[in-house]
Image 1 (cartoon, rainbow, N blue to C red):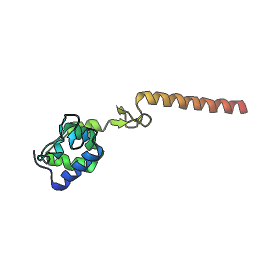
Image 2 (image 1 turned 180 degrees about the vertical axis):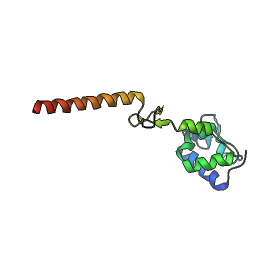
Image 3 (image 1 turned 60 degrees about the vertical axis):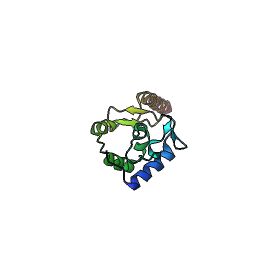
Image 4 (image 1 turned 90 degrees about the vertical axis):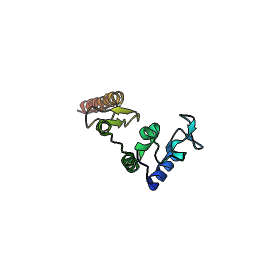
Length: 129
């Protein structure tokens, strides 16, 4: 494993301090230890929680981080293309088509509302004739 360059490391530390839910006063609440990125070996250490939950929020930093660590998640990348966040409930779901924007439950509700609206307009138009 190679070490992160100075700029990438500074950006990673900033992202950890700003966005990591497990970070508090230089400590990792998840593992109850000092944060990996606050340790003196932080340039070469990686944290699974950070890599999976926090780092994907910054695409540029994620690419530099993975390149420096020699991480190649090609299979995960292919799978991540089909993972989306629902427009209505913001839950993460695995999409079955390129046009899918909602999870199955929210899509069912949206279809029901759209059908009710179509029928309301149809009845309104029919009663005006």
